[in-house]
Image (tube, rainbow, N blue to C red):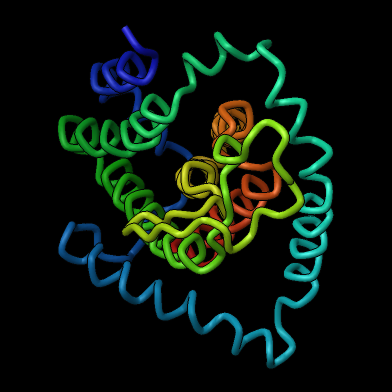
Amino acid sequence: MPWPILTGLLLLSMPNHIAGLSEFQPAPSPRPASFSDSIANIASAQTRIWRFPAAMARGRHWKAVAAVTATTAALVALDPVTGPYFRRTSDFRRFNAIFSGSNTTLAIAALPASFYVAGLLGKNSYARTTALLAGEAIAGSEILTSVMKNAGHRLRPAAIPPQGDLANTWFRDKGYSMGGAGSFPSGHTIAAFSVATVFAQRYRHHRWVPYVAYGLAGVIGFSRVTLLSHFPSDVFMGAALGYSISRFVVLR
């Protein structure tokens, strides 16, 4: 049985344990916790996301943005150096089979879905709210990702011929799609870190939760590189955006 399905079934079978995770936590968020309210929250989050440049113009957050931008630029410059290794190695064949794109998509969706169902079974509003917040984070981050991918049109590593130019990847993918046709940033990574940040923050008093959440998100991000779906710079920006959207927009 694939590990994401096993994880989901395990969570569904443990509503009382999940209910116990809210012990020692702050009171549940006063924000509305229903599917209809989540739709309104997603729209509100988009407003805050796209107004972010205006906040920067007023001198806010520029240090963090400068650090992320500089790191991303450095990784983009190194992509032609790091890319060939993952194109020629077969060391990650088994790892890639486990952390395939479909498996990681299922795992990212299974965690909040399982928490929501377990919260219903265990009458745990904190778990249900956490799941809805994670869903809001995924939706908000993927909308931004779609726009950025269709704007940058960066080629994926797998789309570049064996002797192709890894330094010339921008504005070369000619496709368009709802999910974004380009490579930058990584959609799987932004979704994984969006979910990880919600759970890490909501259950942060359990010290192991942030380590597990961010650790699994990091593994998913790494798998996008070994699968030749993304460059390291795509993954880094996805992680930074996923964390930021969840931490400062969805959770506020």
